[in-house]
Image (cartoon, rainbow, N blue to C red; front, side, top):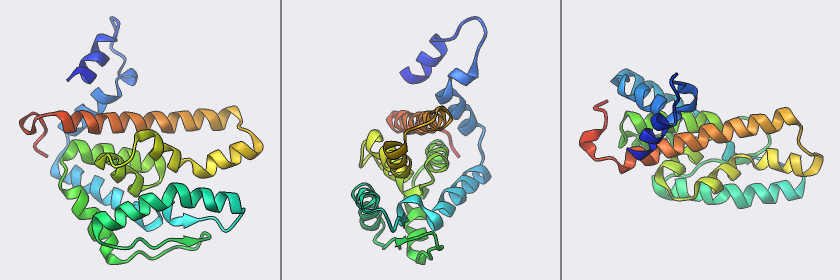
Length: 199
């Protein structure tokens, strides 16, 4: 409980919940119902249809290779974990994923309770990738590696053309959301089962 306690200990006379992301997520998950959990599950699964790691650039060559190096390990992990095959392709045309992909995601997520489902939904929405968020929950790659994978295209453009202040602030905000949700998942995983919500 140290993570939550630290957030409360850092408060002054007036409680500022904007500085207490883990506390907010815990309160949300404690108030959640089975309906909320199902909605979060379906929201995460909906991203598999247009998951970031499945849509590859056609050029330039450097970006194509960078995407391969960052995303192929994630695709391979998901395929092995779910005994399925994610469809990947170049360009922006919609990809059709086999039924087994959604089934794999559903089976993986259904083992978790409300808290983990909430953190996974937040990470999925932040990165545009259900695969990345599930890999974070499974702790098969480091948080830094996964966030870097979610920012491949942006980092490539920044390296070429530089970053403006608005873009930098947006990336920082996304990173905070991703890292806070990941920390929350780690915090919940470390708790005993009888300390978690019943949702």
